[in-house]
Image 1 (tube, rainbow, N blue to C red):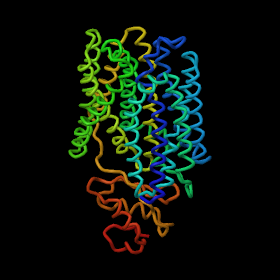
Image 2: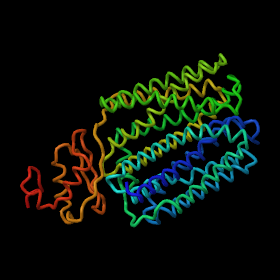
Image 3: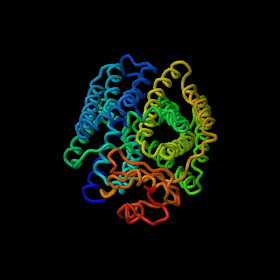
Image 4: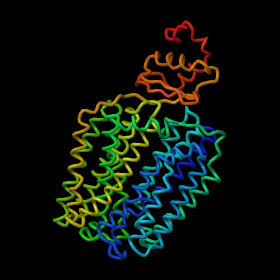
Amino acid sequence: MSPRELRATTGLAAIYGVRMVGLFMVLPVFMLHADRIAGATPFLMGVALGVYGLTQAMLQIPFGLLSDRVGRKPLILAGLLLFVAGSLVAAVAESIHGIILGRALQGAGAVAAVVLALTADLVGEERRMRALAVIGLTIGLTFTLAMALGPVVDRAAGLEGIFGLSAALGVVAIAILYLWVPRPARMRSHPDMVPVWSALPGVLRAPDLLRLNFGIFVLHVVLAANFLVIPVFLLESVQLPAASHWQFYVPVLLAGFALMLPGIIFGERRQQVHSVLRMAIALLAGVQVLLALLVPSGGGLWWLAGLMILFFAAFNLLEAGLPSLVARAAPVAHKGSAMGGFATAQFLGIFVGGVLGGAVLAIAGPVGVFLVGVPLLLTWWWVVRDLQPRYGSNRVVAVPAHWAGREADLRAWVLALPGVCEADLSPDSRSLYLKVARLGPDAAALGAWLARRPDEHQGEGAGPPAG
């Protein structure tokens, strides 16, 4: 990467990360404050925990589409200001209703798609996957950081301090945006990164994508519902002081991450990602049942730790594996629309998990909360039982100017290359989107191929249609 691209990647990853820390710090401690928040009920606590997912789901696709018209940085600024405002509203709230409003405003700053679009504006096609890998790694690390910071900040400054720190992190993100992230020389549409309105209906109806979207929805229903119960279970049944909860979460999260790595590696190398994911779904359902059985006995720290390691191993494996399956199933030129639908389903899952978990907690207690996701998980396992993903990779390659006027020929010629499964051009014909088989040409070879002028390819085995 060039220094400019490195600045863009690190800056945008940091913006993504600090916003996520602000959203998730509350997760491990929020339910511990239920008896101190005016008007709180189990249902309303669940709504407060998950409502940011609703506003995020409603606005993240419109934000991405709007950024093509008003610019990336102004829209990221608007989203971060909403996040800061929501954090401050929640920090000064005197009742659960004020916290619900604050959390809804936090989620309304739905800048994820715009951050990806700005990444595409600033990082060249050949190096874009590295930038996305950095952002993806940041997301994983910040979740662990948030789970560790939440109990520490709660002990020092309470729930108000967590929301106040979230607001401060939002201001830091704004500073990074304007002091570190470069200004793009030009702004383009990136249908491989950002949703396209006209493509959404067809993409969202695709059977394989529907099944994968249902999966990420269920996964986050279970996650949100579980954290309505686990913090209180740690405090009351395991008798671990709230200030020490980070000492439980951090080792459990790290162990779960380490445990999931062999599954990801095996699945990719043996082309068995779909089989590994089905096993992870089954493991998750089993863990939920065992957690429900643990509640009446009062449990024990080591039993709970063991089950949570298995939970996060399965959760992380699914969280990491599902996006790759979406990328493989999506039309090559509309991957952004497919990922937009996928992210919307994910955020809706967080909202439904909070609301459903809160309602079940009020009616059936912690056992019911752990069990409510089991039918959903079993349904998910059933609908993906015959899923057979295409193995290969998506590539984006810059198209040199000397191909202008020969776009139809270029697409036909590239499709004739060995190992190329799909090929399409961006709306401005400056980028070529490819779905390439495992043994197909790499980005460097494709770049070298495109660097040659059209007439230099005459006489090769594959070429433009005659005439």
